[in-house]
Image (cartoon, rainbow, N blue to C red; front, side):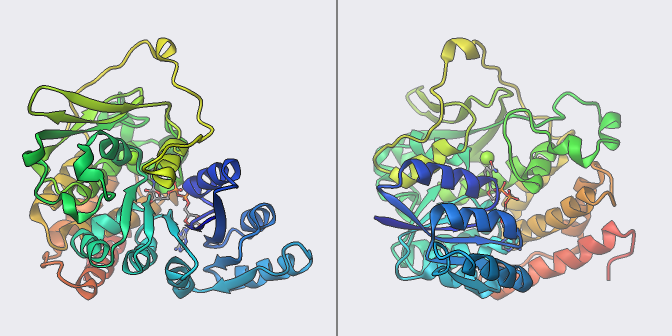
Length: 405
Ligand code: NAD
Ligand code: MG
């Protein structure tokens, strides 16, 4: 039995992971489930999956959950912990084999890193960890013999389309410097373009949070849905790919592909282009990374190629999707620039979701924050976390219409 800790089990990725585990219960046990404060959902999941440990970051929520679990002899044995450090403890728990890192945002960094430091198989959905601290994160993976498998559908597709010798040990750092030597010319990172691909700039000014979260092909949490609409999600993914596959900004080409059937491609120097296709359902990359290097049933319907009929591609417009350009710039600038970009974006998206700023203001907040803070070499976690904190302060001021201090 493989013990899996699911960090962020009540979210979109967490729920899909549990769906896969339910189909593969002879191989996988949901050993630990964690959530922020959704007591009802975590209670239901505990009831169905009977983990050993449940974590609610929020203390009151943890007390409420514990009380509910104690009332039923079936669930009374489950240990309930609270606080952020419990996430790290669960990720590093000696009985845990695989860690699904599916917390949203910078809040997932510490626990993803704890999994790397304890040599786990990391199923990485939390792209923000790599964006913030790619260098240190990859180093921790390598130093501790962890295996890093991408859950993000594009990166999972790239992983599947990479030469086998580069992926033998998972997306570990032994692929470093090998891309060109293995004949890889370019990574073609596909993007749906989100719900506003064909809206004019003026129309964008007045879109609501619910419109921004109505993604045409994927059902996701609200933060990543807004990121898809601004295309910051693709920008974060460019940075994520650069770390996972040791690629430079120039090695990665974003391709708009509105149907989301091709999940990304790798182009080779002999003219071959390898792609991974499938219905847009996150259970495919989740099952792939859990079973790797084998395959298993994920519950995803087979792709009906005749029903798809058409696949379209277009170049992204960097003037329209400013966030994508800002992310490329941050990757090229290096150091703490991606951490600043990420933090400012989290604050701006949150502010947009609360109805405080307009959709088009998000890019402006991120750009102004990047201009305001000097980037530094990202050579320690302290430096990265300080940059994250500083960027949040500046972006918060900008969202409130204040001059940053
Ligand atoms: P979501 O909002 O649906 O779920 C987030 C989960 O994290 C919840 O379980 C929540 O309880 C937990 N959480 C939120 N804030 C927390 C905090 N401060 N501390 C601890 N736990 C906290 O998000 P999602 O759509 O499942 O995305 C999760 C991650 O996966 C993100 O990094 C996202 O970019 C990535 N991802 C998601 C998808 C997708 O299809 N949803 C695809 C690719 C990558
Ligand atoms: Mg993705």
